[in-house]
Length: 177
Image 1 (cartoon, rainbow, N blue to C red):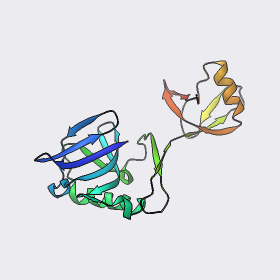
Image 2 (tube, helix red, strand yellow; image 1 turned 60 degrees about the vertical axis):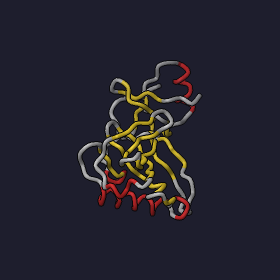
Image 3 (tube, helix red, strand yellow; image 1 turned 180 degrees about the vertical axis):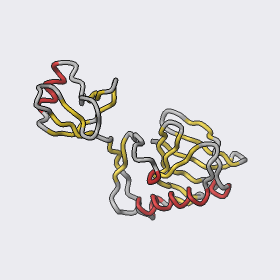
């Protein structure tokens, strides 16, 4: 997760900012948005997925609106002011269904409330064969590379949720520390 910042320096400039990187990106947006607009985004390969607006033309709208209002507004902003061309901006609601995201943010319906990031977890089901597990809706099996993983997975029951990552056509569970 990161931020798209639209500002002037002295010409209009669009920046992608995260805790680890900060870079200027070339994008085709209406210049009227560059009066200090800050949008919440996630970078998926070469696409910036927009889901929230924090500041719009120097006005902090976060404190006076709900997430749902900002979510719909960010979609309307992209539809009206973004033109395909350079950097790819997509609203989260317009993502293809097979797009792999790291997680999602959960909000309540109060104005100015902060969201909580939730990683996406897969549903895992134990099969009839010992130490063989499948991921619901996915191909391949869950890798059980050692006794520690085996004991942990057996303690979870018949069906449970865990973070998994694809690995060589199968799935690797991410064990808690």
